[in-house]
Structures are given as structure tokens and as C-alpha cells.
Image 1 (tube, rainbow, N blue to C red):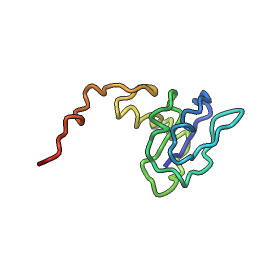
Image 2 (tube, helix red, strand yellow):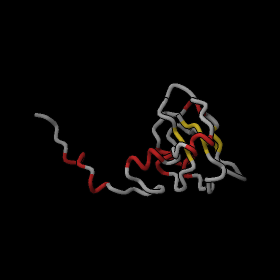
Image 3 (cartoon, helix red, strand yellow):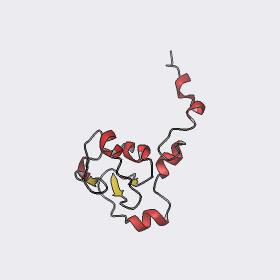
Length: 108
């Protein structure tokens, strides 16, 4: 579930607002988007993956908010950690040439 939008890291590009399939965020005129409908978050991580500045933290727990603080996320180096684990770098895909899933065949 989406937990943090860091106002200090955010560049107000609103990509998270656009990619969220559950319409969790509201764009603001002055500042970072706000998490307006946290309970609607599907924990799909799209917002975190596409954020160009690693300003978002999505917790693995989908059942409800964890209450983690921005300071703890920062201290544990969790901003952008999911995207990094996928091989993405600062909002840009990388390493897809090593993904073998396109070769998977249906068992006959």
C-alpha cells in the first residue's frame, strides 16, 4: 500500500497521478501530489516504479497502512527500492534484455 510521497524528493511531475490505476493520488497546484484515497491502493507499485526521483514508498503490506515514517524509509534506503530490485534506474527501465519470460512456453 502507498505510504509516503516525499515532498523533498518530489519534482511535481504528476507521473504517479497518471499511472495509478486506482486513482489514489490527487495532484496539487503547489507541491507534491497527495495520497487522497490510500485505502484504494492496489499495491501494484506502478507509482514507485515510474517515479523519476524515487519520491514514493509503497509498502509490501496491502491490507492497510503500516505507519512507517519518511525518516525511517530514508534511513532504511527504501525509496525506490522496488524499482531498483526490478533493475530500473531512476524511473527508467533497464535490464529488460535479460528477462527470459518472453521465452516461456505453455506446457503441452
